[in-house]
Length: 326
Image (cartoon, rainbow, N blue to C red; front, top):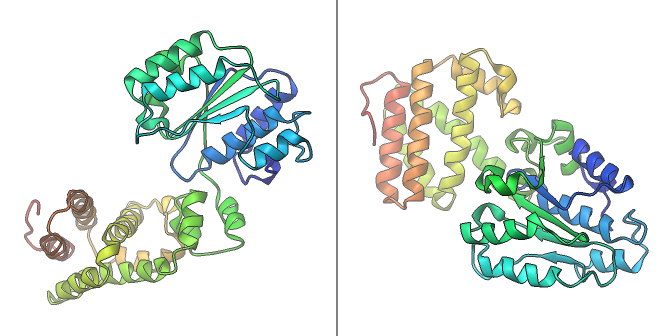
């Protein structure tokens, strides 16, 4: 059975929720805000387990805890929309469900995951029940950006924002030191996902090599970069993300802000690359990568995308007259 002690990081939020339980001050509605992979669902499910536990400790021994652990507790309702967005019919079904008192616990917990796409009509329906909720109901709304919710909803919930994980947190989640710590962007979910990607570290190393090649005065290196993309066509989005992270770090180095580096394990190589290019060139290449990401998301012809990208980057990194866009 999951307990807050088993969850890495987010100490302030865990302490706040445990204190609210201990003092009998549980709110009728919470919004847990944080990027994908930050652990919103884990915290929500764990909090729900405490709320339905016989002695509110998530003991793991009572019948409620056993049912919660198996995802079968009748008083924990997770909204699973029929469509991609949470619509008004989904919220109406929730309202119908909470009109019935809890079956086993003294609380009925409603978890609304992925609420970023909730429709306006659904929000209005949710607002009505938040204005006069049954005393036994606790709503837990999970969202990446709480500003997407109506102001009237925001004013009726307890807003909890997840904070970036520390390097120590991510090392603990990964079971030790790893280059993936630097690439995780302080996101445990991303770190764990990358740990299961056998090719990620190899591609990451090659991305750094491609940036170094593009700084060469030999224009023929453009073909090497195009070939690299062609060999890893299915990973184009990932490659562009990695390259953008490296370019941002090069810019930080040029600005003397090494404390902001995201790829700290590559600091030595990045410093060497920063010495080879002008700040304006690094800025411009970062812009090219961002533009390439947009083109990739719009399914622009692959060959046109990578050829224009490689040419443009080589030109700006070598101080040549480049096009303003591609």
